[in-house]
Image (spheres, rainbow, N blue to C red):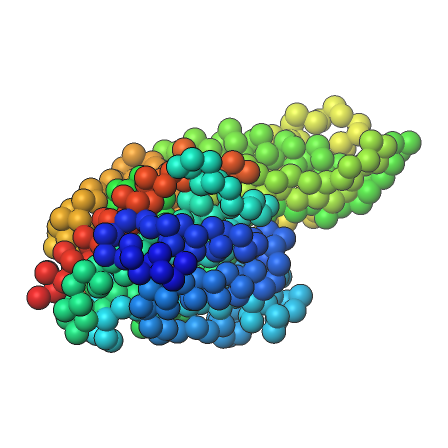
Length: 435
């Protein structure tokens, strides 16, 4: 692998050695522990990434597990806290971030940062190459883009060794993007530690365009805490199945159009009470996910949800006024229904920068306004904005078209090759403007 990597380094595309590195990285099961993956999956993946990066001339700027106090912040989603609470030392040790760099250390205004995440959704799907198409978990989200970016950066510095001393290019390889973790202990920790740049590129699949706006998401949970009963006495219990099923439909009808009108997206997702056919389940929960383009919309939608749940109580009582089996559920609604938030208060991304946009254009990347057409998505780029920075999501492939988060995830090697070449050109363009 080392010999192949050296002989293909300056051309800027994805060489045979890079493909071997990528498949080795994809073979590591780094499914997020929030999605049932191994606690140490990200740590093992980082070792593979670091070895390949060092072989391509990168120096190691950071290889560190998150600090435990990061998890105490109010924005950290509940699933992260719950996963960490099961074994905090093992969780932290298994979730390190890695930053590698080409070029000597420079101030932020002379630094370009490319960020990608090594954790994936579940289940793990081993890599498989079929012609020019690479299948497997992480092919497009997000190991493929990360390796292609690293190949492009290495090619730029090999082509022009004089870049060293003029600019610094960092590749940040982070955990904690998937599973609803939202970058709270990966990317956010790096930004807080100063691993930022004048231009920050998050290598997410955007069709080799760049988007400078990203949504964030909040997750309300509606819980019913009532009393169970049996099929012999269905009126004796609280029927959480009937109540939550009604709420799912009611909120889809009422909150959905409201969210759509604000440019937000409502996902009525998991509903669970039980599995038996002869039992009245008095407890259960309904999960929603609301992606929003700005915090103002998030605050309005959160307040609207509380109002709508009360309106739902009134409508439910009216519809079940003559239903003897739901009488107790109607009567005790306020006592047994609870609303809390698994995830709330996250920022969004929305920034413009004419000079930095020109640098991206010179490398062959065109701007795509995802907030305007509704194609913007949620990723950990939300933590990166700050003074003197332009932050974009930009990578090969597309989330839907390439089956990200499905068992058929894939990426075309031509897309990775194009991305690697454009990243090489981006490094050169960035250096020219920094001068």
